[in-house]
Length: 474
Image (tube, rainbow, N blue to C red; front, side):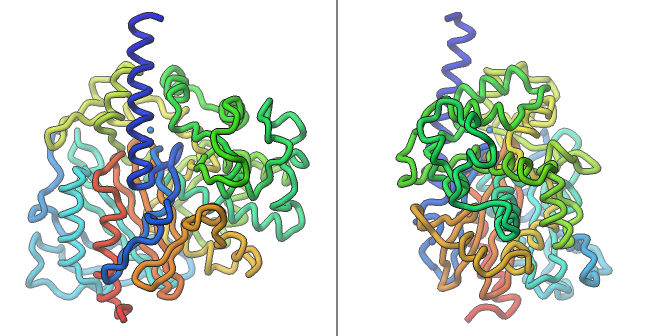
């Protein structure tokens, strides 16, 4: 082995160890995002704590504003045909809105601003977008910080972000709609849909079902945490990776957990689910997800890559720490990719070719969206009339992991049930949570992987503020 090859392997191994440690601590990923442990899914209720749902990795010169420097954003509304837009403030907000008029949403903006500023500084996040919504109304959306450290452009709710493994919940709903039509069965072996050779030499291949795939009990390795996958991607960033390549990479490992009895988060399960969607419908997975999920819910600014792309690229995303070191070791870092932010070297994702990154998640982590779409999309999976009560029960009933159903995190916070999921891909960390009894949805995305503390801490701080503002606190 050459010295160069040894260095690459060493960095890849260090990267995997760091991502696994992050997953165990917070939950973490898309092209890698481990789901929540029971403790993460049901945090201790300190008034109104919020969920950490399935996590994901998914792996400048100007600093993020300090808490007193982040300007209070004017709320923006996401597009949506079903609801009339809320009125926007007529005056630009001041830095310290102690004298400002009440926000049209009723939100306590001072409290929201303080919580966001505190988290952004601690997590060293360049930019953040946030959306909050009650029932099916247009969400109130906000942006803070910078979308691009080199240009100083502000982060806004109109920016597209990668929401990673939140995609898994959407793919699961599409599969359940096909179950309702009689085209699929959760407990029929996948070989009935993809043939006998789809799993290669994987010893449990003949017995794997959709329930195993979407509940993470197939025993699959999480390819996004694997050093070999990082090395593979670094060598072909400009070349897409096909779903069957991902499956071959995954199944070649053999089982890494007890088949059917152990929970082991793996994005590959939902990639196989996407292949099954295409096999039984004869249509591209992105087209089926649009017609079955996005269009019925009035979600117009969300796209499943690589089959479809947003009208403009996502905002710049940044990596730091071990992820930045991995990019440094495994690739030639373009000069324009380097940024010094709050004393750390960050590496920008968009400075690289995007073909591999936009295909590695697919139906397990490939959605790109404006943040205003995310509450309507995620709430719609549970309250949008898409699925029958029987399908909802399948999706939201815990199995091996009490904090996870089929493609969705489950938990209880302050006596309130929630459904949630996280997403993490290179350059982005996202989270969404829906509280059915409150009919309340929160969604956020930061243009950094991996923020520390993770986004669950931000949600814990924001939930009681939103509940109090909207009269939802008991």
